[in-house]
Length: 217
Image 1: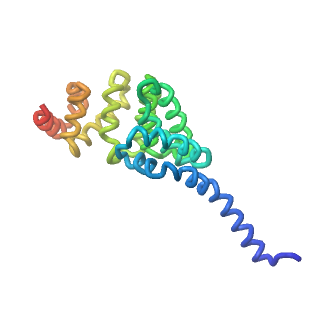
Image 2: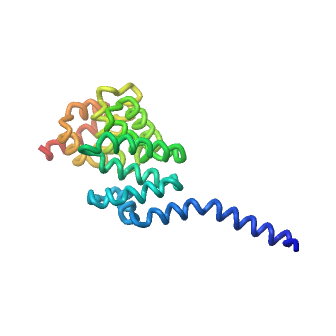
Image 3: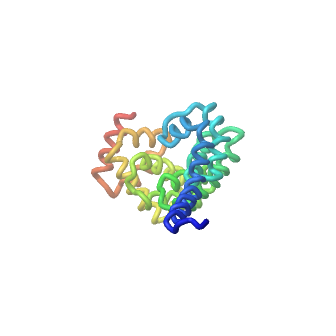
């Protein structure tokens, strides 16, 4: 017995929706054991090392069917990229960020994470290119400006003219929004002169930074 045309169309539509949604459902299911840790990672909250390690297997499983899970896994790998695991985890994080960015090339957070993963591997030029992409995608995004300044300091010797311009913008934003945090960052990295060079074209931002630097000393 033939199905009426409308019933057949509805059946095909339901099947199509199931096929499209199934990978996402599978990824969510696979991520369940690490859900709280994954949410904390994406918020940038502090996570216990044991929780991070425990989250890696379910996040790896989720990443097989979810593009977004690549980013969460990459961030977890970065958080554990130290000691004997440093090179291996940084390289794995790089691969995950690249897989994520292949599907979400406009994500500034993803490009910043890729820059950090490249930097941890000592790959300065790829790190610089990823950092520039992050800035271009979202120049004033809260939560990224100071991190970009920190990476810019680490990459200072490799900066080209375009990178200097983009990072100068980031330092000005940081000096205007969070001068005390910028001053602490610069003190930690022993990079006061670099910050002054980056801010020299903006007297107001430079003054805010110098005032905060005095408070931090």
